[in-house]
Image (cartoon, helix red, strand yellow):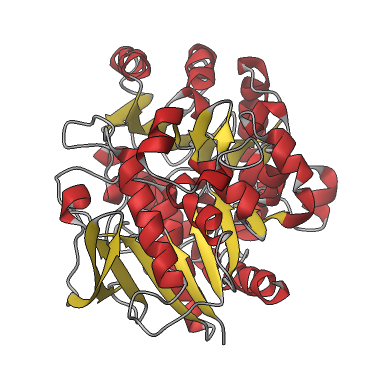
Length: 477
């Protein structure tokens, strides 16, 4: 049994802004179920919601701050969570990265530097907890100073660093480096200095024993200029220590057989019942209820990364075909407005819901026939996996985790029952429109369509599969 300290800035259901929270809420639980001794450490934000008891354990002193370590459990599990409690930094309304008005915290560097310092004290067993990890598993830039600071320690634990999205790097002016009072030997171009700026992420990439990211294809992509954001050279240099492990999904929460958010549960043997969810979706969104019209679904942040501009370019031509398009998401106001305009002029074909609604998200996954995910980059992605579980055929661009989880429908993949969706290469409206037409042709062949649905519904995307890969990685350290 290994002792693992899992370092994260967010974990579902305590607090969530994105995919990192899903991973941090699921992977430690899966590791613990496989017999590992896992503890999560994260800041004690004001916005944390828990039904579990929270108790005081100890106080550590770092950089003139007295920081309490509190203990609770990840709700619904036996996984211990240590909360780094420093009211001067974390006891404010807002989320981990922005205040209640949506403005990024002015003292983000100070907040996460303090969090990293306390984590190092815990990792080195200097915080009166009588527990020393074998492995410290850090996630994203907010924990990037942990590997850097641990590199200066004698007989330190092994360190794994997981990149969830290279686009966020935690870069601050060099003056911040001085004000944080960090050890001088870390400040050089082969340390945490990045073009005379301080880079938290670089600390994780240089000083960790192993680097992972959330899909094998993304692990290759971040070694190129297009996806590496200036750190591609460093990642290529460390490629022997870099690997990709696909995120699992919460198979209890996303399960068409037991899902309470949908109007009719079903499985791959009762796939005809999926049509009842389609009818419920059409009805709820005031679209004509017609089981023969293919429904395209999309749940996404409305930003260029997700390829929403490509869809807007394709919509005029899409509308010349018999289909319906339903979208749930929010983001760029310009995109939101253009989508609204389309919906207003074609109320019988398009439904746009701005915002996020968990129940509707589940109903779209269960009721749509086809799910669109034309992302420009996608470290892992989850909706293409949910779609397969719900017998909804994903249409994806060949990038990151999308390339690793969706098998294109070709003569060979149809023959050996591995085809689960449709894949296109270029991030252009033309390439997307071509694959949408392919989807419409396939949809008109019910037997082939049902085979695609069944192939996808049989795949194992549980966390225990991914957790076993992490355990192999840990045992090699």
